[in-house]
Amino acid sequence: MDLINAILLGIIEGITEFLPISSTGHLIIANRFFPLPPSVEVTFDIFIQLGAILAIVWLYRAKILDLLRRLPSDRGAQRFGLALLIAFLPAAILGILIHGAIEKYLFGPVPVAFAMVLGGILILMIDRNDRKGNTHATEEVTTRQSALIGAAQALSLFPGVSRSAATILGGLVTGLDRRTAVEFSFFLAIPTLGSATLYALAKSASSLQSSDWILLAAGFISTFITALIIVRWFLRYVSTNTLAPFGIYRIVVGFLVLTLYLTGLLRR
Image 1 (cartoon, rainbow, N blue to C red):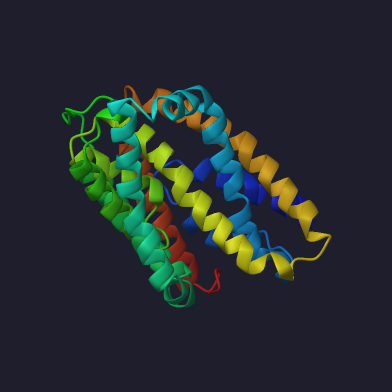
Image 2: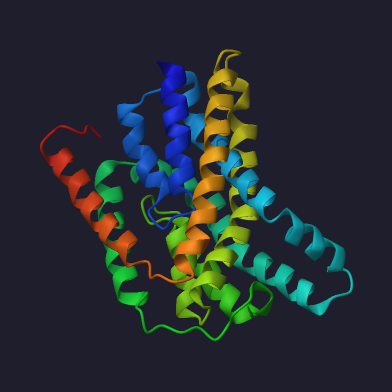
């Protein structure tokens, strides 16, 4: 049963990590229905993010290699690298300072429910059919735009906000077109999720038992495969559609979680 739960949680992570619906929020809820052994449950949600990161690296491997090749001499590649660094730093610094407090006080159904609803409302307000961006490629993102996207990403430390939603909406507000905002969010996930994952693993790996690695591997593989499918689909979707359905979904799920909690069907 633990192996099935690990696979299901990996699928949920793969679906939700890059969609603007909050992977953390979904996993907080899903962990209550698909529990894992205590020795692995803290590390599991962090470890399977590596599968999502690897999916992005694999899908964009040609572009990543090209950027690295051009980085020493090409201004466009250098501007893009600087933009990623600027966008990465706010969440990284704030995460080190307050992650413990967030984990202690905010990782529960009620904060997640409120964040889901508020995020859904913001999506409906910001991403409208008439929104036209003036930045049409990730290498055109300016330092000002990346700083604002980084500030938005820092808000996603609050469970249920969604790193993807925060960075995509931040990109839209600063003038990126929808597809560019989504792609910049994908690239920003590599250093953001990668550093957070490695940091958490360094702290908790010693507490793992040998049997736990089977569950971690199952979750990792299911996350990777699912994320590959979802990312490809999402890029096609945002090319011609708004994010409104995701906003509505967040609001519905937020109220559902709050209802389940208030009726006692979902314990804290």
